[in-house]
Amino acid sequence: MQKNLTLGVIIASLLTLSACDMSKKKSEDGSSAAAGHAAPSGDVLVTIGGKPAITVKEFEEYYEQMLEQQPQLKSFAQFMPDLKQNVFNSMVGQRLIEHWAEEKKIDQLKDYQQDYKNALDNIKRALAFKFFQQEHPVQVSDADVKKFYDEHKDTMYAQSAAGVAAVGVSFDSEAKAREFLAKAQAPKADITKLAQAQNLAARNFGRVNASSHHVDKALLDKILAINKFPSVQLVKVNNTWWVIEAKNKEEAKYFPFDQAKEDARQKLQAKQMGEMFEKEINKLKAEYGVVENKAFFEKKEAKTETAQAEAQVSEVAATADAQPAAKPAVV
Image (cartoon, rainbow, N blue to C red; front, side):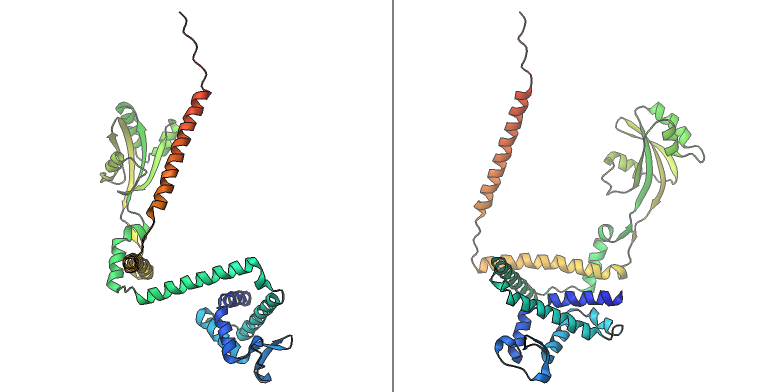
């Protein structure tokens, strides 16, 4: 199992290594068959069709590059002494696929050329983005991370929400509500079972707090005002009477800062990176005299609104046509 997992990681790593970088290495050491220079036989590890395909230097550089990009492979080495051989075998397979593509002239296919162009465009964008980030680094201190954690504890790092665990049954009259309340306040009474026995609906609100949007605000305020737990109480909201069982109240529990620190750091860095990009992009727009054709989008938005209005008119007209004609009045 460990071996299969390792081979999968190796193959994935090989596929993600830069083909451009490998081409550069070929031209530098003169071992490429396309260059027309045969390397010394002792340096050649693989030949394809009698021509050097992989040299010792090329493989060693490839292997080191892969370990740099996939550090976890270093940990496999102690459990898998044949790691290097597996990398070599995978590299041979990759070279064979590349040779097959050359023989089949895959690079002359229209789809290949479009994919190749798209790949180059994506690489250029990624590298521009990478070096732009390097020129505009975002610095995040431990104090900044702690502040971010404290400000977002409730929304990002809560293990369990604070609030009151409550169940309620509603009534349209005070008399019925008080009759039910008396039964619900009896020792060991179960409000849910009592409601079921009377064909009433018991609503389980779950644990509610000030951020609970699934409960009417007026009712929510009444529940949160309860200060005795457990207890069954009667509250009125507008013209509705509620028998509320407040089971317990808990304070929020949070993931400790030490556990959440790295996640908070990454989120804060992403936030500041976004702010940096917005600021710097605006600077570049001014520096390079960028002019945006906003009318293009405004026209499209206007067309969309017009189309929606026409569709609504058509729907109304169709509905009117479907209605039966009014009978003539009898005089």
